[in-house]
Amino acid sequence: MSGTPEAGGARPAYRRVVLKLSGEALAGDRGYGIDPAVLDRIAVEVKDVVALGVQLAIVIGGGNIFRGVAASVGGMDRATADYMGMLATVINALALQDALEKAELQTRLLSAIEMRAVAEPYIRRRAMRHLEKGRVVIFAAGTGNPFFTTDTAGALRAVEIGADAIMKATKVDGIYSADPKQDAGAQRLARMTYIEVLNRGLHVMDSAAISLCMDNKLPIIVFDLTRSGNIKRIVLGEPVGSIVSSGG
Image (cartoon, rainbow, N blue to C red; front, top):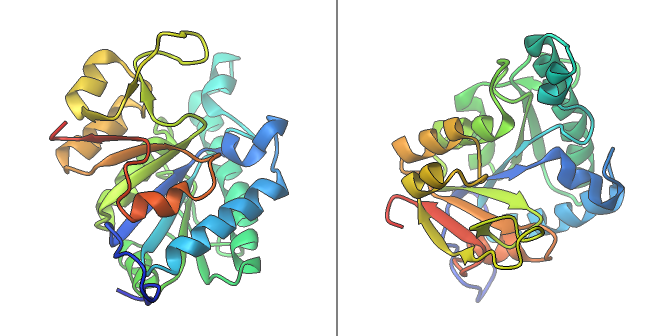
């Protein structure tokens, strides 16, 4: 593993993780587009994690710019709409890469849709080599296929590169029995099994992503990105957010 843990610091609980960021997260309070302040804050958090010697890959969505599903509902061909959404993720990935490099982190942007002028093509072994060298890898363009979400892309990439966990960034502090914004009685669920999430129809990730994680025993950690330091707390093994695993 590349990188040197902080002197006297705690040993990371995870060796290699995938961070799944939604496009909406980059928009901040704006609701649309990219908020530079959010990028800068994420870059600081990522730098803290890399300093621990943890290998970090990031899968990013594009909903702050374009949502393929929404466009298809409006009458656009679904495959065309999804490809447009994939291109939106590349825009976000370039913005995130810029922020990370301003924070003096080495990064590599890998796209599932080939566009050599701005990104390397996604090659599994190349991605793993970048991580071993201590670089932050950003995966863009989802899986490269329509009809698959970036949640599924996150699960797929995490399994492919042998990640220890996938961290799903949200605006709430874990998984709830109902939408906490609409139901005052909603309860936070600290630990769940994949089957429980699927059976209860909880919107953690789409069913394809959950099933992929279940088949490969990949833990899913759902956490609040808006609270500073949460990414570092998770990789150090602190009980942050909710965990979905085979053990419950």
